[in-house]
Image (cartoon, rainbow, N blue to C red; front, side):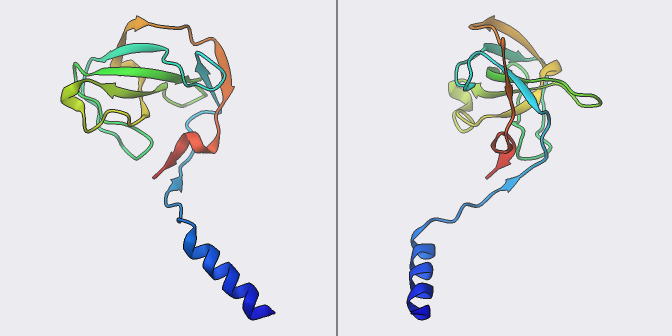
Length: 130
């Protein structure tokens, strides 16, 4: 009986893909979004200068690049102010769809689609890196 249980566990373990990644420290405990699930685009922003991502939670941005903004972290004491977004444009095709954080001070909003008036708690998955 015990061997059968081990065999079942082994088979299930081999059939299920392993999740690889790491949960990073939270940058904030709350975020502002356009909706309760943070799926709608808040705005389109333009990068005013280059930014090199310090770790996997962030995205690299280049001056002049357009970025769709999906959420804005609520600034906490002694922390920076970060927004979450993804780059936009055909010349940045290899980065399109990758959502990450960047300092809000490095961009200017070009067009606001919806107001970010929903305060939503952040979760561990918001800061998960694959």
